[in-house]
Image (cartoon, rainbow, N blue to C red; front, side):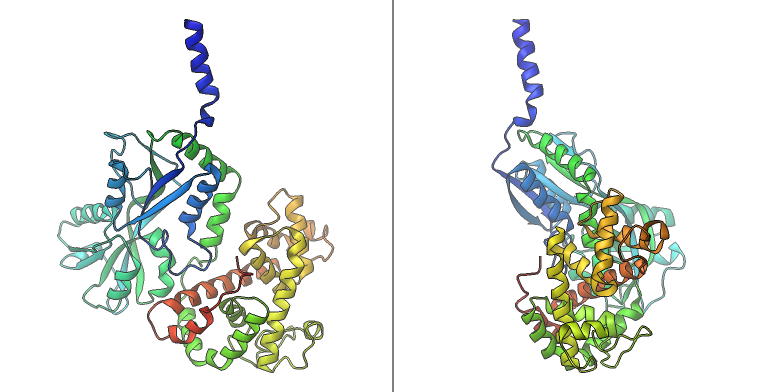
Length: 463
């Protein structure tokens, strides 16, 4: 009898990963930009892509339900209405005290940020919060941070809490309201919104970091094992960092609001002259019109007579070799320049087909080739293999390109030295402009009417 029991226990232990999951896993996700993006061109969102990866890994269908607040989403998990929660910047206390709930690993943490309206003074001392109305989205951890801060400064600022955890809508509405000098937000949720909220600036940070992780019910058969195995996989094989690079790797450390002002101004005053040429060329060569526009802005700031010290000219800053390859007669003619630039981008994209590069990584490689030449991109791919990095990801090439400035590495390549740091800055600048243009095209504002025509019929060649 003892041997039989031992056999049963051993069998369950060794075959625990064979326990089948339910066909459907119910997911509770708070309704914020990171989970249900309106602005991002890269896909369903960083946090949602991690969920999609789990769906494929576990071979289950996810039923994702948006909830207006973190508390509502966690309540669904506690009461069994959800099996898994995407806890974005939310740290429930005693989460496993009464219910069989387990926490996944922390994959991001960020502080609470205090923003100030540029029409009012920034925070010079915490005591200036006294007698002020401070707005915050409905995040219980932000509210706790505010209460701790109020105790420290020995006064009672007025907290105005939003109805939901959403940062975007209320901040857009209140950004011009001078009655709200300060706003308290969570940095991870605010980061993708900052380029569109130019009237709000970070003035300080407070409190403990708010954590991003999953919570799930341990009583769903097989779910704990699958979740733990999945997180172990994506944190060791580079998936987590590759996705982080895709969604956030292009944001500058400090937001240059003068650059954003210039971009908005150029969209209104210069871009309309080239709209029809961009749309026609983008359609002909299967490129997102806004991506083509972002390349053009990076190259010339929409100046058709732009000329660099290296001799490239025009809106798309074409070399004479590229002009001959693309078969045009004038680099300074806007129509010819835009058409040739689009054609050349598609030419580089097609050339990368043999290098096993996919999705947005392939577009980023294409942009690097437009800037530094296809040969140097091939060299970077080869060096990535040589040093043991993933050769098909932009995250790897961002690390490799600077190495090609060093004889130790460029001496091993066919095409030799290249301005590797410039390639990285170039690609990430285009990604930044592209992201901002995508957002401005859908948000209320004067730029939307100039950018909206570029969002119709995005080509299938895009990831």
